[in-house]
Image 1 (tube, rainbow, N blue to C red):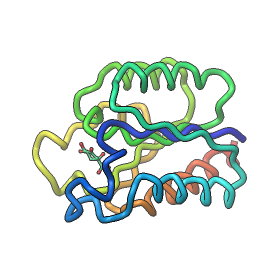
Image 2: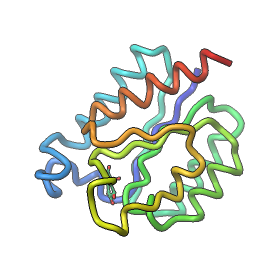
Image 3: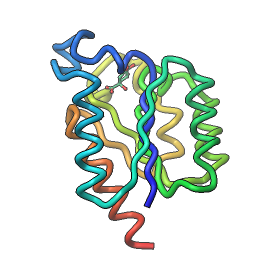
Length: 145
Ligand code: DQA
């Protein structure tokens, strides 16, 4: 089974950016967490990070038709991007949204998630472990088909 994990802007700055919110683990550690969980749950995984909305849209489109599941942390584009929402809806691939922080307890402008409207599940506030949770939830969903 093939999994695509997409990370949006500034997630490459993990470890440096706002450690009180995002912790001190780096983007390399995020990738390691994802690879370990993908192995554990039997997925072939591709991981991508970009600071550019169009690159994220292109990656979602390119996932069709040979990808079984998408895990996405759209980062700041969560709260602004109808283009990412439309791309997820276009491909119709089961998707799980991840946020490292608990966005529900943060600023008002973070209370809307466009991408989340195309995801069957959201994980937030679990730090990098949230990626493992998301991959487990994806496995359960795909196994139930
Ligand atoms: C984030 C939450 C977003 O609001 C923020 O813009 C991010 C990261 C998270 O993982 O907690 O860049 O998606």
